[in-house]
Length: 303
Image 1: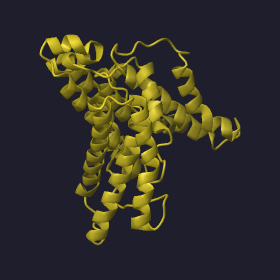
Image 2: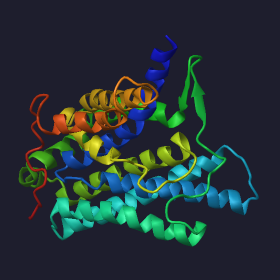
Image 3: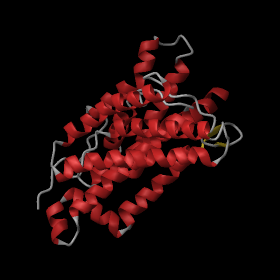
């Protein structure tokens, strides 16, 4: 029973950053912009959050206060949104290849934080540990970060925004047929900018959770493919918030199970570590059903 409970809470913790990131990607791709840069946005947000909290602690002499980690989350979200803006400018204004733009951001996310870490901490791989982590919520049998709850509560909110509001209708129209949406008075360019920036904000929050919620420091490449797994969850979930929820729980369970199995001798360690990524490849290969993306996704819009 204890193993089942531990696996349940571990699944929630593993699924939360995937869910936040996938919901962000949902906005972007529903508007017609492929966002393969989610991986990089997570890393930039994680670095920004951890470094911000550490700098506040240094400046205040090691102060411990509830507001400090939330400042880190805010900065992580802002940095993620800024990276989203860069991707939007390249993809929307200059109509660059969206895959190339996203890949460039992912590469930059492996190098740029290392430069900052070298300046601040005299190493290129980790920040200093922080004392002010995100608060935990206890359920008696276990506890999770408050951002984990926030991620799951965000799902019905995103559903309502997408399918029950005029803004959501416009967003979906822009991703399916931007020319028709434009003739109806929808500003396609503005909608796409908003959606891509919002995807960066949510991915940045996911990164902040990893560095000051799940762990207590930034580690180079700590996302470990979470952005790509979130994209797979987006496809598996058929670009729908509740579908994305189910997919991220599945991937989160695979990661939690891999962690549990690492302590035993049931399977070789390399196979256990590969489980989440094998599942991702199976989904991307179309092993579990076929998904139809928004019709205009990946296509630059030209008035």
